[in-house]
Length: 121
Image (cartoon, rainbow, N blue to C red; front, side):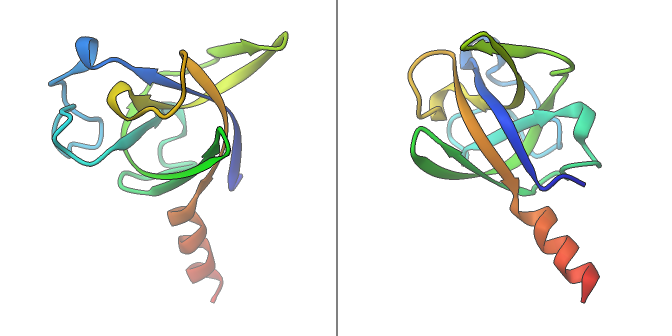
């Protein structure tokens, strides 16, 4: 299992998805709850589990969000400096910290790392 992902974070809009259910069954997309991240559904059970803490470094800042949603990112990517970088996560629009549609990010699944360390003890 890869512990670190590098690629692009995008955001998804409250106007489009607001009120919709979250993939992990923990409520709906509403701004009254704590922020979360949506991860590629293709990697559920491989790189992440529902509720995992995902640490992201982007725009010179560190953010920690829980994995509560998923999307079919597939082979989609964002062109950045003529390079097609994979989409590694979606942050709901109200909680994005960057200007524009996307930002480069490095992500570590803190919960998966803890599970792996426990298994090796």
